Length: 262
Length: 262
Image (cartoon, rainbow over all chains, first blue to last red; front, side, top):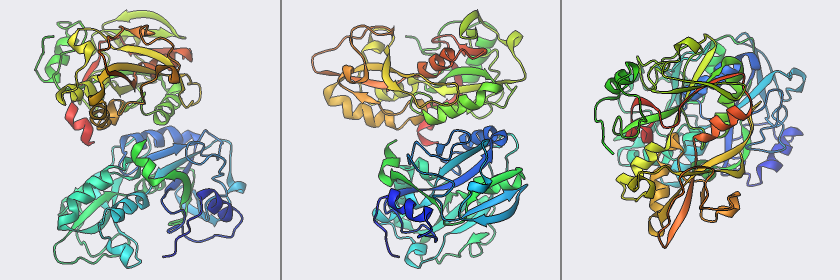
């Protein structure tokens, strides 16, 4: 994986003008990347409350003022309508378009939410010497809907989605303490070991993403996943919603390390 | 200070039936006590967003469903309308009553917010061997409005209010690491040393609470204070608001130690 070491401001400018169109892995080294969810103000209170009640799957790092596309707290001057390479537009839970610029869809009653993503704690795990099979093999993580219910809020309810990484037994404590430093990026694992205990029947067949390979002695470690809030919002059939396309994250000006010290 | 070691459930029952009417310091040993703010749904989104944007002064630990007085996440079965010894009722920023039971004022559009309080990190500091002058002398902490602005949200804006404790120089690092474990109770200090740098002209004259005494070598350490959200809400002249009366906190079923591991 090649690494683009420029400041996120420059990378966002290239995304905005169409020079960069792909996934954001490897871009903005060591800067926080974020999941995007945009909802009408009418659903924003319930969604904000849902995130407050479910901070592990839904770690809010920014909520814009209604109508504003500038995430002033994490990337002053950025424009969320153009500074993500690819967006998905949903109506009543159905995808109606995938576009590189959502300005034609923007409305004054829209509220943009940015949520931390696993890139931040994966960076910390790798830095701490914890090996990640999917990174070494250029794959995605494995994800499942679990039997763990989110605490509902208004119209939003559904299961916690988890991502799973095989971790060497001796490294499991380090994986916990390292990721726990980043509550803004899902924090500590929510489950370690026995997949069946959280409703996962077959650890070799993920609901989303790629199957992982276990070396002898590896333990399955489960983190709450940012797919949760999007899945919950879509299941609620909210009349309108914008998200980033999978892998095409918003890159903030916040260094990953800073997220541990907010 | 005498300590009531019963489970919070029993203490709340005594508060509800009028047997306990005083301040809650010393009640529910080692359980999280919380600030209460109740606002109409029309202001609740802005308030929730204000708390999300200002987590140090406004550490949300529970938000009830609109109309519900049961803080299901932290004290299942409790009733916030009766389980606080003394409440204040405000209209347009003016106090209109102080009562022991807010059922006559309750409405279906009210949203109750519980915010963590300094008792939790003070318990942790004392447990860690950090001496607190005001505890040893039966006084309140010293509090000031600062020149640090909260990040505004909708109708809510205003300065961060801080509490200040003199800490022995050698204990300052321990005070930081210990309180940082409790982001749900204001977390780490937001300022250490020079009071003038945050707009405090005279460290001997607090805006609220009691003046503190410094021993030679003590450093003034400032934490974000739970007075902030109430002050901000009152300054916004929200049409209606209920709070606990100072010192008469809501006692949750959550052990203080659990707040470091959520």
